[in-house]
Image (cartoon, rainbow, N blue to C red; front, top):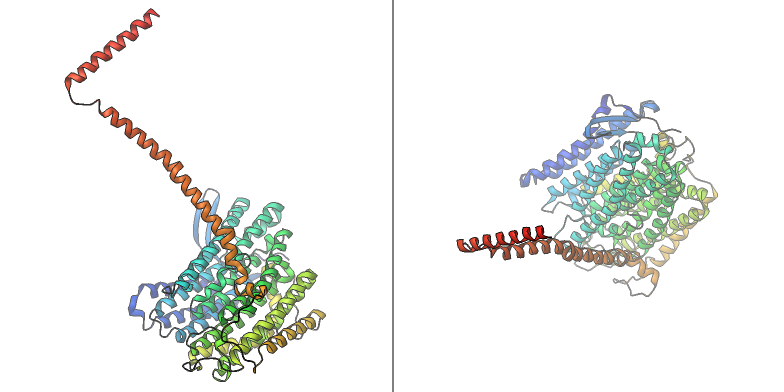
Length: 637
């Protein structure tokens, strides 16, 4: 099926720019108003997010009531760049894909804003925190609503800036400041891929708009298509923390917990998946680049699960889980039309249950004096019943328990992976079992078993402003998958070039052999996780030393930092020193040497200018004599 060309915006669709403008203006007000806004800044930031969500709902309902051919809407704003044959405009594109992202970003983002009112209640810079949250939401909305890659890149960089500000929000902690810089630098590597891909589009098509790229993609040479697909994948790996650009993700947990929920559930890490799916026309012309997406996604889902098994920090377990689940989405996106809907389906359900669990982890930290070590928890379920119940809903969703959200979305990806390649399917199945193990371990160590905290710690449930978002997200983790299962494939098909019916299954309970195998593998993972951390077992408060290379690798993030330092940073430093030395002694030496030579000659010549008339007269006589001698000799010769 061809992608439906967008139609000009009319009516309420012409107001789509307000989706971005409202949180952006709110962020500007909160940053410029100063201390006078401390008492109410968090309310303004939350209202801005809710206003965008309300408008997104109106646009979604309007789109539902429109004919399929009228569901892709173009909202032109103004011309941005005019240079020679190129005219690049700033505009928005509302279609079936972008509206789902808009609802997720503004809906889950609003719940995170509400939660943050309580979580950041005692922070002196709460107003600034909400300004950064608003900036993050505005940038992500620009990213998913842009109608061309260059405007998308502006949102892409805005998300990078906002993530830097939020990860390093507590910059008085050296670890937070370092984590923010690390995220910023690693993402710049991916951004180079984006810049080169967009440059290639401008060279190949004279445009970076989605419409022009989709129309011209089929005429690209295999070499250009492959290069463009790989460059876009590099950009996606940076934002979505896929191998080999994943090293920033776990360190990003240094930011306040609502930031972790926003980055990992509704915004930044989903951008790479969006980019690949939005670029479906490019990947349809290059099997090599599509296969690369599948390989990267498969390896990352296993790597993230591996890390999740070895961590004791509750937020870092969830961060490894995010890395793994995004890997599933990338795997599905790389499969092509048969996997696009599954990738977005799992992205949406993941937004529900992962935001739920990150905010649940924040609730646990709130009651445990900000301690993140699960070895210091145990038995918290009876002290935090709402947090436990909602977290349990997210746990059952992520492991794929029947009828919970992840059961539908992730199981579809595993089935599609088996249909695509038996080895890839088997690895995706292994990932599901490992996910069940480490998530069971997290729940057992945190909410069940014997208490392991010190006497001065007094666990307690969080206030309503924090638990209400947990309840909403918990409910979404339960029913979200069932509500979307029979609908999302047909809804997305026109926007991603898929055929109706080829990309989703409407069955309430999957009965294929792969589905039953998945349930069996998940059950094994749950049992192993339960037995290893059973309620009556005494768990040490300090992780025991081990020589097991698998555990050591997991604890050290698969030695990603060591690899980057050895392969990239140290050689980069050496290259920088060589360049600096060459510049100093070569380029600067030549320039400075020339200057010194001229200066030295001028000093010597200056000695001839002594100010005595007799000396000048003598020089004139000598000069005249020499000139005469030269003339005479030339005549004689």
